[in-house]
Image (cartoon, rainbow, N blue to C red; front, top):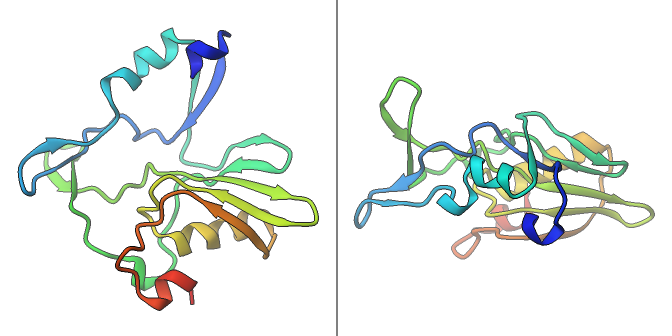
Length: 158
């Protein structure tokens, strides 16, 4: 996408942990992290300017990133099959804290929230979007929700 834009210095907002090793061990060990074609070096050489932040970043008025999403509801605290390597070299459960969402506050409509996989939990993402914007109406949620086996509380955020 950056090459197609054809400009230098295009902001690419992500969490600082985006390039950490990320893998699963079941049924066999396989890497599931950022693809080599999306490495830090490739992003920069393709014209991107990385902005790595744990905090929300305003992209323009009414459009911002969620920043690192805090778990806000107990039923979203599920064990993850994903692993990573800690700063001291230990294999640990990956809580996917690098996953962020994009939040648009659409005048007279409400929030449009664009997620990736929603590993932190869609209810936590929605609650954080409302807290960040002060807008309580959610017009749309676009993205992965991992609710195939969801229970009513997870699907309705009650």
